[in-house]
Amino acid sequence: MRMDWKLELVFVPVSDVDRAKDFYVNKVGFNADFDARPSDSIRFVQLTPPGSACSICIGEGLTDAPPGTGSNLQLVVNDIQAAHAQLKANGVDVSDVDVQDWGHFVYFADPDGNRWAVQYIPGRDALDREGKAASV
Image 1 (spheres, rainbow, N blue to C red):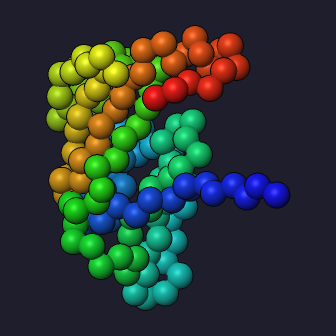
Image 2 (image 1 turned 90 degrees about the vertical axis):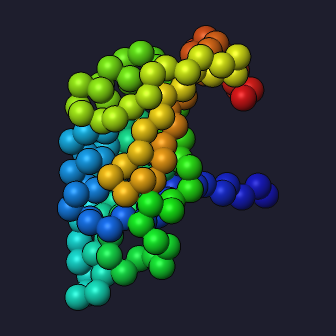
């Protein structure tokens, strides 16, 4: 029997939970799924990129990692120009589109310096529509 191993939550260390939540929801466009304080020392905020099966978690009392030291995180989109335009229009300091053979990228960081890449994979849309696995 095969067991699925699903990555569904990634912790992102931030210094100011409300500022980070505002950035991810109102500037980047993540959905605010959950925001609770189960105890005086813990605040758990779960945010999910539209269409993603994996969320990020920010909060208080969740990790010992210093703010801004989150792993380099990557989102994948089907239109890099639209993603770039949305981020820029929402006031995110986003890079120009970087076109590489293996993908087109834009880069940004949250207010604490956690770094993100947004990738468009040329040809992936056609493969996905045909029901074939896209190789990356």
